[in-house]
View 1 (spheres, rainbow, N blue to C red):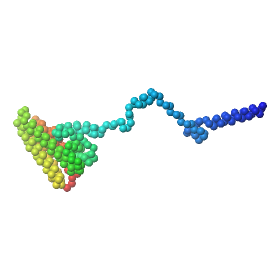
View 2: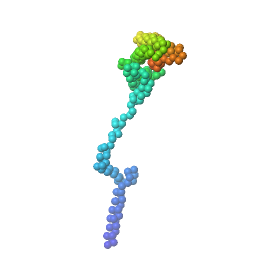
View 3: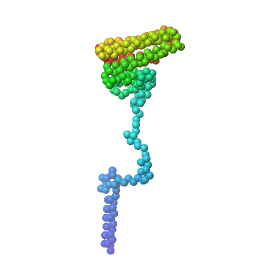
View 4: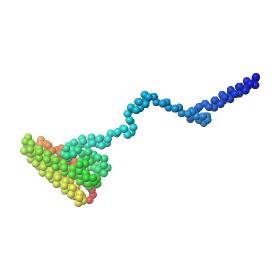
Length: 247
């Protein structure tokens, strides 16, 4: 009887030891046991969770749109070239063209430079082509300004002196046109000296128009803003001619 009890006790202890060896331990302590815990299975989603996932908005990378850099750029440009847009006959916008940016960055007003040449670009983006486009922008704007001066000259509320000043300005604008056109011709003949001289002359002719009104106390030119734009365009052209064209 005592022998049977010892046998039963031995069997019980053996079973206990075998079950102890099968106890799971965490994976990062797997060197302590030969049996690792299997990962717990994910619970199946309920019908309500499935419906919620199906109706959730798509927030993938392709569905999220960042603000357009072109929209931001256009917002800035519209403030600077508000006067320029209606007189050019089109709405100028900046374009992300590295060649245009490289040339315009040498000018005093790179945003106006890049904006004003857009209607006149012909697909070539070398400095000579971009300068021609900028000169054409100056020609186009000057022509529109001449038309505005003629319109103002018919205003009966203006004094005789003011009308004479407007006529003088028209003469100056005609000279500006001639200077712009001579500058464009100089690009084709690679005459850098004449190019710079003609652009400088265009700026001087504009100043003569302002001086005409300045000779009479209290007289103000109604074309000051127009002159400022032509002055800026001519200045941009001169910046490009001075920094990118060499004798």
